[in-house]
Length: 282
Image (cartoon, rainbow, N blue to C red; front, side):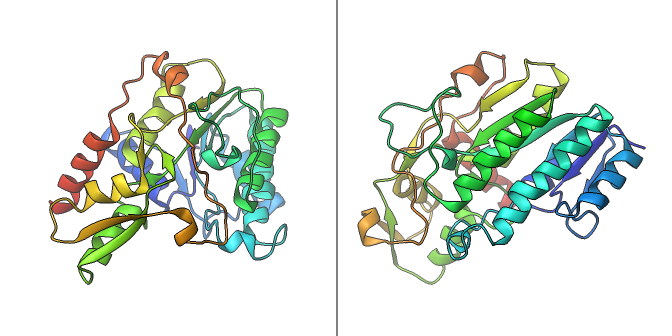
C-alpha cells in the first residue's frame, strides 16, 4: 500500500508530478489507462480499495477540445471526464482519501472583463468545458475532502503542448500567424504540480482554487515569447480568421488572489517559460 495515488501519470502534468515527488524522494503509485481504466467502475473501486491511498492526485483527463465537439455526450470526453471522475471520487470517499482534481478555465464562458474568481458562476460553452464542469459538481457532491484546481493554457517539458507546437513549426516556417484576441494565463506544469502538493502538505482549506502562472497574455504574446530566439516572425490574427470546432474563451484570465493568500509563491509565465526553455536545451 502507498499513501499517494496518481491517475493520468503518463500525461504532461502527471509526468511532472511524478518527477517532483521523485526529486523529493516521496513514494507513490502511478497509473495510466493501461494500469487503471478509470471508466471501469469495478476496477477503480477494487484498485483504490486495495491501495487505500490517503491522497489521490487525479490528473487523468480527456483534453482534445475540438474532437469532443464531434460527438457531444458520446465521446471519450464524457467517459473519462465525467464517468471516470465519478468512479475515482466515489472510491476515494470510501477509503477517506483527499482528492485533488484538475479542472479548467473552460468551465467559464470567457466573457468576463475581469479575472474570474472561484465563486463566479460557471457557464461552459464547449463539450470539454461541460464535462469538466459536471466533474467539478460530482467531486463537490461526493467528496468530503477535496481540492478542485482550475488551470489554463498548460505547458511543460513533457508531452504535447503549445510551446513544442510553436518550436516545431518554426523549424519549417519563416512566418507564423497566431490569435491575438484570446487572453488568458499560461500555466507551467512545474508550478501546477508544486501547488497540488503544497495544498495537501500545508493543509490549506478544502475547496476550489485557481492556479496559473502570474501575468496575462494573448496566444500571440505567448508565441512571440517562445520564438523570440528564432528567426521566425509571428504575426497576430483574430479568432475569426482562425476558426476552430470548439469555441475558445475570449477572456479566461483566472484570478490568483485566493491561491496567493495561502502563501504559495507563483512565478510569472515569462520566468516559467524561460526556465522550461532552459531545461529542454539541457
